[in-house]
Image (cartoon, rainbow, N blue to C red):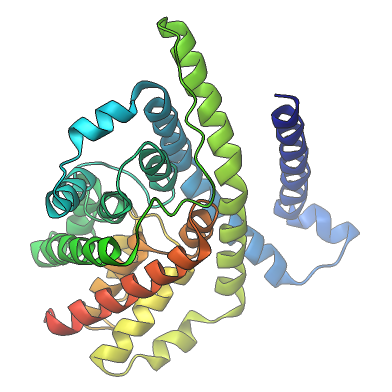
Length: 327
């Protein structure tokens, strides 16, 4: 208990110092009078804060749901709800994910808790991929962003679901066990009172937030750095044919690390520059895996698993889009 409190105190102190530095950089005019810094530093700071502010609400919702799962969902519930058949379990997880409005950041702690409770890793991956990609809010925002064009929204939903299924099936053959970095602590909550359970829920949510939060900050900072010092115009110039344009848009989605509820409006702005297949690469690949999401996954799962997962998602998304090109 003492160790946990000491760790929490250290993390709170670090967060406080970090917040002070970011606040000073935000007040660029006042800082410039004292310290002369390159304009790019202030631009990077603005990008970093925008990514962080966009992601934090979803992370908070995610850790709260993770806390609820930890306290109220037992191993017996998991065994009863998840089908024994691997393919049925994957299908069920993808369908549930598609109905669950979550961002790619907020869904990581939820999947962590579910897998720790006994959900097979392949079912967890199905949920992780479809949740941020094809939930009702994302599909509606895609429909609106593309001028009420149902074709792009439908293609995102159908192809995204197929890709998630294929990736989850491949994962089921390649990996056994939960692939969590360390043995997941599942304390027995014997308190029957609702008040005690709510208290434990918030305790777990706070622990989860500080555990995940530092990796979100690292990922957001790296994404802001790359966006500042790598010109998107240079990337756009590389997209000649459909294949190269799709690769460019997938790379852009990974770097920008946009929230899946808003990425369609950014994707729509590229429609005059790239074919619809490449735009779909942006819309499908980004919610499945991006820079900040990769760091959050590395905090939860083994590095080998995350590396192969990113590789598999990248290959399957690209091949599927090349196979089913949208005109």
